[in-house]
Length: 430
Image (cartoon, rainbow, N blue to C red; front, side):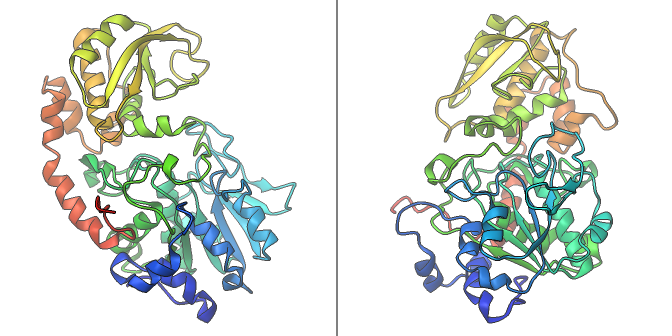
């Protein structure tokens, strides 16, 4: 397996927590159970064993979500514990989370800690290798949102590839999948459409934690990028998290993972509403409810709401809505559309809902709806990971029929991911 006992005897306790699911003994489960019923993150478990990083120059890859339950950022907590962090690296939106989507954060010296804050967004693995000079071990602690086109997981993948090439150990501090670890939905990416919003053949909603994804990437995909080398990977797993838990059931404080994912409600709809970015519809950026407000100046809100409610999609309803974005699409213009209300998040299918919204707008406004054409392939093809969804919507294939075609790919993915799951399937008897 790919977990390495590279830190000696001081790491034994942590490595027990970081083993692959098939290697985790019953005794380890008993030792790591959180008696208070709250989830304990990989960061919090690491902080209980700061001696495990003694004598190591640590490079920390993080952003505002790398926080303890008492609202202390992981960087500050590590420094207070005597962990020798020498560089801090940030993904898209930056270490401080200040940049909007697609903006390239800067690198600078942090005035508070005196540490270099280094931007990784937009950097390829070969460029990262030199950025990791002077570091003995890399630690990744960033909250994911459970959707394939969220870029933090690819910053992790690129950093793992660079670490493998530089022979630097890589530790992932695991955190919950905020929208649960049971459901997998959407098309599996066709490698012909890989990009930084989809590097590997996983579905839109993957149902894995960031630590599980690290193991999946390391086991299945990274050797193709590194000539057969895998990262010296350790995952410090959580205690107390169950696959059927959503973030608001963990006891952990919510930190917006990025500027336009302010709430768990946003993360819930994001796997499907993120597809709106591939059209000329506003996905609600520039409002207080991004990805929950959808529309365009040419849309009559009442007409779209009535049509969507007639579709009787599971777990969701719509109301007509009007809004004026302060940035992004249609800045300063009055936009008509709908607000999405998730009434039962366990039956709600965000990807089917997103496709139905796109298809319905296209049917109601065929002369005004358009796919976003910024480059080839279409942006929607990058987001869905295939050109088939766009072509089938253009051909009038119903959204439910499109979604039904993903079944075989999702079954294959479930089989592949089962080798890398750290947390067992939910047992309804418990």
